[in-house]
Length: 135
Image 1 (tube, helix red, strand yellow):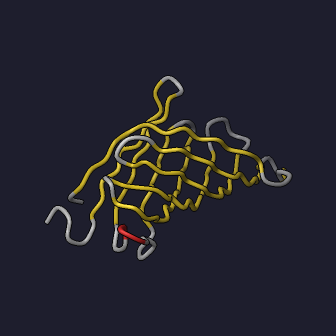
Image 2 (cartoon, one colour):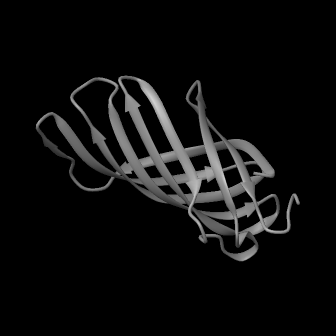
């Protein structure tokens, strides 16, 4: 990835429907609302599926999120794919741009995003490429 953006974001998650608990595992759905600040000045809207196991610290989530706004002054949108696993407290998280999801000035975007949470504050670290940029 040739380009880089970092900043803060706020996130709000609301349950969507009634969780389904059986055999020690709870399946749920959440609605995501995010507000990104910094070089990525955008809003994110998404849906998340979760599974919480009966073992403390073990869970999984998958989510799809549409991010709309500006990235380094380029207007458009793109979709992020999230896969997160907690294995007895050890987190494994993968967030990437869905191929061919970029619109407007962000057509052709590819990339990977990392999230860091410090003292309850959320931060993004986005490595990405755009055709004609950073080459």
